[in-house]
Image (cartoon, helix red, strand yellow):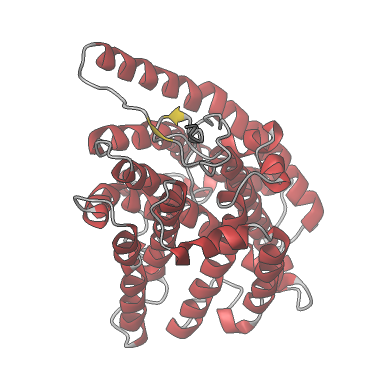
Length: 421
């Protein structure tokens, strides 16, 4: 009697990332650059098409949803495959090693170089070095205004291990996990309600983590669904995500349609005026849907030409240096205006955007190869030494990067952060 051969599932690390997702970081970063250049040149005030530039801060939603997906996925995967939980200490060390050195360098340069930041007070240094610049009004300094989202992201990093343990529980039950992490929607809804009754400030408190718990929670829910689908533990309802992924053009067309709605006043003002609670709620909901529709075709389903394109070396390189582009592009914009002695809200949109992208990528590459990557290597060497002493080890886990029936080998990509604007 013959038996059919079982599909071979490649054994890889639970922390391997989906290569095609690297390109989403680049998309988010470029969108944020366009948003900031549009504001600096006053192009966002153009009544015909300026709304599209104003809403390019949707890149923040892409970053946050992607963070929830990628960072929660190891907890879900290890639970589904019977592996030990990821170690919180190791996870936090990796996050700190990846985020802090380049960020601290950017803070150092911006506070020293930009004349509008001099003299920087002790409070400026402490707040920016500790990611607490968002917890008081008017504390973001020139060249560092985009770091509000990084401060919010760091708050998510810190609570993720606890949330992950509570969400996964002692046994793998994907539906329960999805329901628990979707509690982020309730957190955001409650936060918005407090804004609506006037207990919270519609300017200051829109930058705090509870405002975006729904975005992070949605990413975590999709990570749990992805793991369940790839390990054969998903209910039939989860298959809708693979079905959607098979129609990427439809997903992205829907995202563009939602973006068009977001460009209207329904999603709040284009300038720095604080939105009403209702406007902020609409913007959060639209951006969440847009980010999800962008992510699903790249993360779910089987191998496609879309994933091949997103996983190309050039796209992945842009994703690799996207953190540096996020960190340095506001400084580049400030320097362009200082060197050229240009007043604010002037300049050509296209020229400023091109200059910002070119020099922003140069700064990003120098930051990555000169600071970020060397310290990642040193951190890896330290972990290897500890593993050799029996103090740290990694067990093989089932790869969830592709359906088991196809069993492709997915190369590990360079770990990079997902940060916002």
